[in-house]
Image 1 (cartoon, helix red, strand yellow):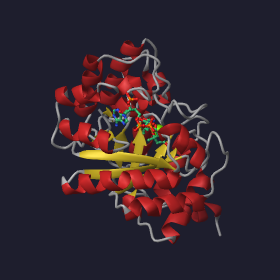
Image 2 (tube, helix red, strand yellow):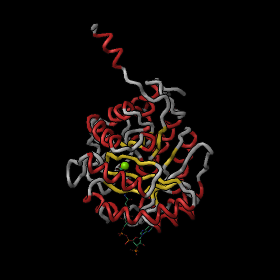
Image 3 (cartoon, protein in one colour):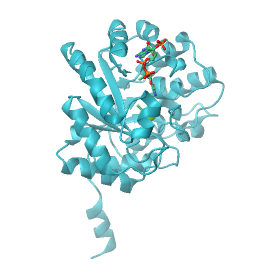
Image 4 (cartoon, helix red, strand yellow):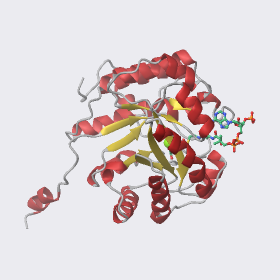
Length: 319
Ligand code: HMG
Ligand code: MG
């Protein structure tokens, strides 16, 4: 066969539309040395809303000793301008967190566990099964209140303490979360070690065990520069929700060596180039990142942001 024909036949069928789930105000800011003021956090979220993002994780209701940077999340929720087309989830680790979230008018929460025991103990002071039991009353109460629930599975591709993690370990915890039940599961590459082959392995294992693609989201940290390649692998698998952080800030204080999340600008640039709709204004995400850069006193690490940094242009993006 003519090689060009073979190439044409191999072009994959990719989704027409993708949900970009913005985690900058939570995953991004939890890893900053200094806590930002409530004023700055509110303006950051409002600018991300302006950009048309369909979901913005505003913060977390965890122990202020664990993550002092996000201690005032309730106050941030009280002051943001919510748009009807945007969801505003927050992380909740236990019933105390759920009560605080509900008092702040939160309509979507995320519980979070991991595919490896040691990371989970460092992060939330519980083993994996123990964390699932802790979430049971949280999810039950949330569902009574018609609050949507996402479940995170951290260290799905590797653990900073235990090394490689098997797809079977991911499958086990995913099914425990689905049994709670949660509405969506975000598969987290907490320390940014995944490559496309690992994405195929994990997603295939999940599909083979009956998980449907509509409940899955992918959450990549871009520590080793494989974030976008991993998204592309996810697209080939038909997954339509991707987590990212404006400017590429982020990391988990309990995951040594983790760098920022995949940058929202880089993700949108890739998706636009592939003709995949997001409904998000790349230019306005850049504006939000520029605002945050002034607040933190440095340019966040995203590649697209670096490319347009010294200019007024957003080259190649839709306005
Ligand atoms: P613990 O010490 O086992 O909990 O921590 P505890 O129930 O014994 O409580 C200890 C203290 O915290 C008590 O206060 C509680 O009142 C308080 P004290 O009596 O010492 O003054 N407390 C709370 N305060 C406010 N809100 C609460 C709350 N709960 C307890 N909800 C706990 C267990 C889970 C609370 C703690 O370990 C914790 O908060 N961990 C959160 C860690 C975290 O937020 N990590 C980052 C997010 S996960 C992530 O980034 C990964 C992700 O991005 C995906 C990926 O990349 O893989 C999602
Ligand atoms: Mg993360």
